[in-house]
Image 1 (spheres, rainbow, N blue to C red):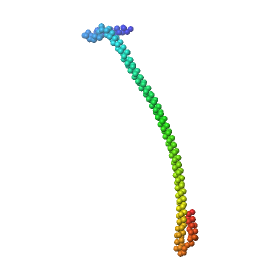
Image 2: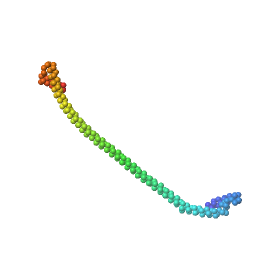
Image 3: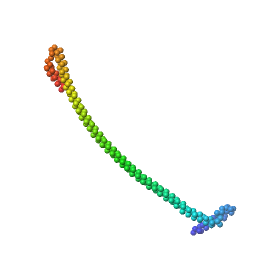
Image 4: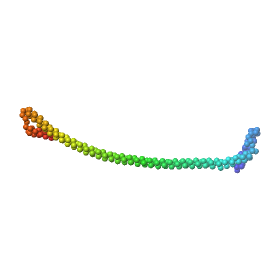
Amino acid sequence: MRTPAYRAFAACLVALAAGSPAYAAGGMPQLDFRDFAPQLVWLAIAFAVLYLVMSRIAVPAIADTLDKRQAKIQGDLDAAEKANDATRSLVTAYEKRLADAREEARRLQRERAEADSAETTARLTALGERLGAEITAAEKRIAGQRTQVLAGLEQMAGEVAQDVYAKLAGQPADKGALGAKIADAVKGSSR
């Protein structure tokens, strides 16, 4: 079936070449129908050699290069996936450690606040007791000084009253009666 198609094609080429004025004047020798058979033989030989070179050398080399490239890409994708998984696990571990550290910090802060509160309470209690003791001591000192002042005041009032009585009455006052009135007056003012 192919042979008639080739013959028809060759006949067309011959007709074109024979009727061409360029061929008659020395034109193109490859269109000379007498040279078609050797040209077709050499075409077949060149095609067979080219086919063998391509199928035995070039195509396997290209296929090998493509296989190596695919293996390299797959290896890189696998390494990237492993690195991605490792990164995810590291991020998860980091987040867990961070959460643990935050919880530990909160616990320590709570414990420190409780310890500070207890320490502050103890200090305030001790300060309150110390201030209470100082206030009690100060009240005792004030009461003692008040007693001394009142005793001194009674004596001074007695002396002033004797001098005033002596000057007004012209005679010395009775110390016992005057002392009793001054003691009554001081007791009445101290209430």
